[in-house]
Length: 521
Image (tube, rainbow, N blue to C red):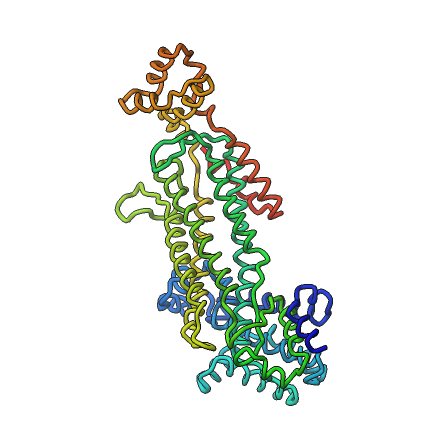
């Protein structure tokens, strides 16, 4: 019987959440804590919204994410700040104690259960400062949360409940789950929505510019005709694929004690230990990982962080393409304040440049953390802990990059006439079409055409020579103009727009359509 229960725990999944009312309640409480966190404002952090204290705080910040770019990442602070991690630790401790009561281990009165339910939801910066004061005395972050929770329970007359706080747990049972909860809420509540907005805006622009002709370049040199819409659709589709990978990503959780043997938990729960663990972690919305050391295997955390790193480089590609379009004169920018201290005419693609730098930094930092988390000496050591704390910095730089890309798109006006003129000046962009049409006539002329072009002849001159040699009419092999050789570019832009609309199911990119007249000239 015991082995059956153990085996069932290893198979725990979301079905357990749906079938157990207490578990659904626990998951809803996690969501309420997220909602509470989203209301933590700059005023809560400084006590002086917009005042001199806030200015000094930013001027003295060592990291630009807390200084120069603070406004761009405010919605990360309830989750990835020191305050956020403390709050999620408290949530894990409170939910664990409630679960012990539900399983008949710690018989808590209804008032204690209600208090444990509400405490993480009401937890704010003042309470976090109390926890930090305790930590200053004891020198241990999780123990500080444990003592805070015990003290609060006793102050409310729930001394019997305080006895069971942290019973059977080790610090990493709390930290690992708190880290997973923080990442999940940032992923679902901040990153995926912001990426979706960028993706939708790109798709709307792609649809609007689907037939706008443009010269494509390979190795920086003229290649063949394309459309602006197809080029933007490419980046929209990449973003959409990354959104699909991130949406619904299951974060891991563990409750296995000091070395992963469940010995302490067996003292508390007996033969029901593995069943309890599987159901408890599922109630938090986490994927149970039951074979661990003191630390959880970092594999799923690392996979997620590698996803974010690769996403950052995909968006770096977009930032560079937008910068190059600006350099080519295809994009004009709505004036900002000052573009240069000495050149009055300057309006620079600063948002694309800022995005590129932040995204590259995010990619490197997140990849380093993902790799470093894979190792921990024997049961564990703390070298990975200080690295893990910097996940927030990497995600902040990623979010800054995404938001700067959106700012650039709002400033950008795509010059369709300039793109058309540039394309028409490069008739060599039709050389591929010419050699393929010769093939359709049974003539393999690609090497001859290559030699004639290398000799300095214009495409039309080279085609004329070949047509005279083979008795072929020029109009049979030479397209009328580059606009006739864009293939399925229009259809691709339309298809990507449909896919983005279907998969994301929202229309926040509509603002791009409304501003379209200002963006295209």
